[in-house]
Amino acid sequence: MDDRADRIHVEIWRRFIDNANAMLDFTTPDGYYDRPTPRECRECKPNALAWWTPTENGSMFNGYYLDAACSRWKLTRAPADREKAQRLALGLLFLSSVGDTSGFIARGVATDRKTTYPMGSNDQTLPWFYGLWRYLDSGAPDVSERKRIVARMTEVAGALEANGWRMPCTSGSPSRYRGSFNGFSWDSAPRLLFLLRAMEQVTGDNRWGSLYRKAIDERGGSARNSRREVCARGMVFEGRWPHSWTGAGGAISLRALWEMEP
Image (tube, rainbow, N blue to C red; front, side, top):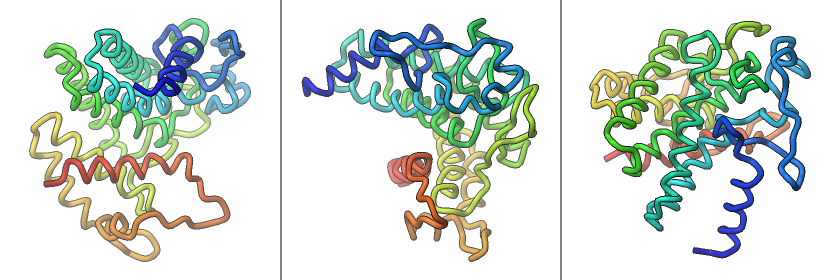
């Protein structure tokens, strides 16, 4: 194992994984941070998305880091590495259990470990699915844990489908939804395809596969391209800013599709 990567791994667990097993955005060098209070979350301070707070990206960061944690465990087969992957997965499940709206994926929680900022996003929800899919695929969870994860993924995916693949917010949000998988840009089209293909893989339910085959050739956007054509074209930034950070969700979705497609 590369010593530099190992030092980073140790530092992340020392400073950036909180007691809800969710990854933080920032702390002081000794691990201190100001966790938002329930009142701040309810009043949407500084905003409804938790932007610029330490709990802004729990689902996003957990999902991406769980991919790395699973790879590490597959290399080492060390019980400690399996436990860390499991903790990240538990954190994702926890973040899907707060709020009062089915399909809502929280970013983090307040000091009471239950109140959350009311808006998630497609950039939080995609890594939530991706990280759990990687965890299931790694073989790390036991039978009961796998069953629990698949059930929760099915519940969330069903809620998204019912909402037209839009991400629902929870009580106190200034809007009902934040983001969607039902788009046709390079970073959006692969997300819906990944979700459908992954759900078919983990559940064995052909209904998800039927939705996948329909969605891949569905056309939309100003150019009326199919999602298949958008994926084939690849990364094309439009507008002033590239948004390459949040666009990572589209890139990993395409990679995962490449792995799953026979």
